[in-house]
Structures are given as structure tokens and as C-alpha cells.
Image: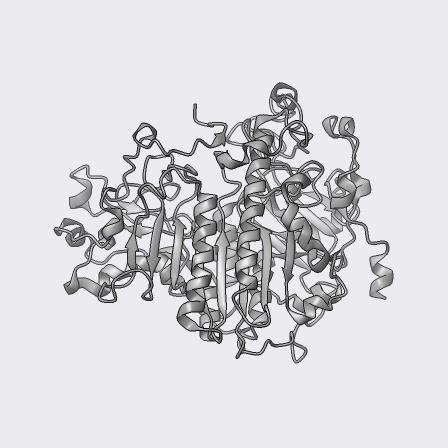
Length: 634
């Protein structure tokens, strides 16, 4: 019956490669690209769980969460396949997923993956009030706005979710005997600057703010950025603050007598001027090798790898300059798309390096890697280079282009090797980042045995469905960050604007691939759309995503009962336990803490960096790696 329901299995990605370019630029219909998805519910893993690896041999899990990798930016792209030679070599032994949904922006997606809970259940932190005696001085100390770092702290509060009410995938896997590590972009909370200083009389209190950072969330080591966007080679955010960090909760680099967490700012000639893609790859490999050396072969490893690619501003490593040229890349005429292609080339190289290190880390070569995206690509900005073609919309919207992504499951699990979907595309339905959380726990046989708080996750383990090409137990989800949407079975109900967004961008556009000159491409951007000026719509829009994945035909007028049904279901799904980042961010006696003479916790490696200020100048470093980039702030 399920096979009959599925019908012909057609891959939207494969078909997209053959679209006529003139049709793309004219925005013509792509409805023939429908991906067949079957919303049939099953009970998931109960006694029929994934085959266990021999715990005496050790094994590893390595999820890669890429920043803003558009639907048309990964393998089976209409123009970017050239950038993924290693990933393409993995395809014969991997499972492709072309309906892996995420939240519509970075921080909510990361929080959802880490906790396995919906973004609308995770209320991220607001900036607490600065004590009056501190505020009266005009000092920048205290809390910054949620969207950026500040001299008063390291990293923003953006993405910070409640420590008291939530447990991350790292903490859950640690309970099952894993050691967990994180490399890359964190964007799930930073550190109040007063807590960078160690005061033995206040050790408990000063440690509290570290609970927002990776070591407070269950990771033994972390190397990367706390905040959202920063320069790829200078490692400074847009406000001029240095945002590259190392921290550990177990002894690896710091003196054993140092208080934990041990933290420093990686800097100096071997760091500043070096592209983060290279730094993150090197550190990830080091973490894997150090784990093997310290714990031997019997302790499983979890490595959460979150490269900055493809966060703006777009910058590619210098060594990629010979790649993605006009001779081999059809979209090379557009500098932004070309830069993104080179960044993809560098990321492919990193995946190869990490995969080869994982492959040699454990007897029996037992490891799993997931490559997924934290949302759709940024295709609407004037200097963006991503592509979600043929899907509608751009990052930050509730159209498919903002939330539907591709993913890849690869590795050496015996059931993966024997999977019905090995070397193919999964056709059983759709999934969400919260389901990747549950599936990795399922694979480790560490799924919660109870749904009591804090194990009331929203994710569903999909391992069995993925390897058997069985119907997905994920049948619905909602989004409520910018606009509202619910996907339930084949149908999707959307409440959003088709006019100008608050940033002045036209919403709901099916943006063509950027293989043309900017002015031609931007004719869509500059178009005066009906109803522009950011006025919300007056009614819902309804689409059948199975037959109309590009959201072209609004069915709301034809199916009013379906609209009412999904609107009610949206409200039902919005309910549930809410947790608040503010529960763990307020500093007791904050004014006393800030007024005390500090002693720095940052150590010997970072003496030339004064706190998180960014004094580094390009001219001072002759070894500067000139990134291939387009500067968006000029």
C-alpha cells in the first residue's frame, strides 16, 4: 500500500539540473519537479532498534550543521556540483535526503538540533537590566542587545536557551558513555565578561554564565566562535570584537590546576590571517586524534561540527582561487556565486579531512556522519550568492526556500551498508532538525526512556525509516519566527507577506541562480511588487507541497475547510512546555561582580588580545591570507 501511495520516485534535485535557464530567469513554473512524500505515521523505533556496534571497539558520530546552505548549493545542484568532488564520491554508500527541514534562521535551528525541541518551545534570552549604579556611569559593561556581542560580554545572548529546563544532545550522549566535542559556530549564547574573571570566593556564581557556552552544555572541548557573523580571516565580528575561542571542561591543553572551564583566545601568526574553514578542520581532526590518544578505543565520540560556511560576508580561502573559474563553472560571471562556489570547495575539502580522520579512529571503522543545513540560503540580498532554486523564498522567510534543505547520511554502520536507500534518495517523507537529534540518540541506543521533563523532546527517531525507505513518522511541524506556517502531510499553510520585508527585500520570490550579471538578477529585487511596504496579508495561503513543492498554486479559496483545519492545528501545536533563556542568565549581585578588580581567566596563548576587543590590523600581519571575497559593508 505504501509503495502504491508513493508512486513514481522522482528527485526534485535531479530534475532541477535540467531546467531551461531562460525559464529560471522568467520565473516560470517548476511544478513538474514535485517530490513524492508520504505522510503515513508509524511507531518508530521500539524493540526494533538499530543494530548496536560493539562498545569494546568504540565508534563515532559526526553531525555537520552548515550555515545557510541553500537547496541548490549542495550535491545535485544545477551549477555547483563542481564544488563537491569528495561528497559526490560518498554518494554510492550514502543516503540523500531532499526534505530535511530546519527553522528559518541560524540560532533557532541550532537550538532545535541541540535540544531536540521546537524553536517555539525555546524562548531565547532577553538582555537583563543593567544595575542602576552601573548604568549611571555610562559604562558598556552589562548585557548587550541580543543580536550582537559587546565589550561587556563575549558573544551575544542570541540563541541562548534555558539551562535549567533543557538538556543537549551532548549531555544525553555523555550519559551513554560518549565524550562530546564541538567545533565551529556556536550561536547559542555567550559569556558575561565579569565571568571571564576568576574569584575563588565567588566560584559558584562566576561559573554560572559559562552554562551558555559549549562546555556548559555538555561538550568537553570547543573551538570556534560564540556569535553569529564574523570575518573569516581576521576573526572579528561586525562590531570589531574578537570572536575566536577555545574552552575545555576536561584537561587537554590547560594546566591541570587551572579552574574549569579553561578558556583562551586563539591568536597569533598561526591563527590570525588563516581562514576559519582551515582552522576548524585542523581542530576537528586534532580533537578526534586527542580523544583516541586519551581514551583509547573503547570510548565513543560525538563531534558536533558547525562550519561558518556560508555565513555572510562571503569569503573563500586563498587556495581556492583556481577553482570555480569560467572554464569549469557556469555561474562564474557572478562574483558572489563564484565566491560561494569556492567556499563550498573548501568545505568539501574539510569534510574529506574529517571523514578520513574518523575512518582511522576506531577499530572496525565504525562511524556515522550527517551533513545538514541550519536553513535555506540567503538568496535575496544584493550581495548574496546562495541559491534555493527551484524553491520559493530566501533565508528568514517561511517559504520552502528558507526551511527545506538537503542532507546526507553516510558512514559505516552495518545497517547503512545494507540499506535499501544506499546510494539513493530517501522518498518516504520529510524530517526536521529535531528529528536528527532524536535519530542520533536512537543510533547510540540512548533515547530517553521517559517523556518527563527535560526529556520531552519533539524529535522522532527516523533511523529505521531512512534505511528501509519506509514512510516517515514525521508528519507535521510549524514555524512562527517570521510569519507563520504549518506543514501537515502534503499540505502547507502559510501566513506571510509577498511585499517588501522590513529590510526592503521582496519576499516570496523564486530567485534564479546567480549565473548572470548583477543588474539582470536584481531586476527582481528592485521590482515594485503589489502591496510592497510591509503590510501583512489578510488571509492564509495553502499549498500542496507534494504536487507543488515550489508553492505556485494557492489552494486556500478552493479548500477553505483545509485552511480552517490547519489553522486550528497550528494553534494546537504551538502549545507545550516553554523554557526561557533568562532563567540562567541573571547574575546575582551583578553590580558587585562588575565592580571587583578582575583576574583574567584567559591564559598564555592570548596575551596580545585585550579581552574581546579586536585590535588586529591587516597591515600589521604580512602573512595575511587575502580571502577571495566581496565586502558587504563598503
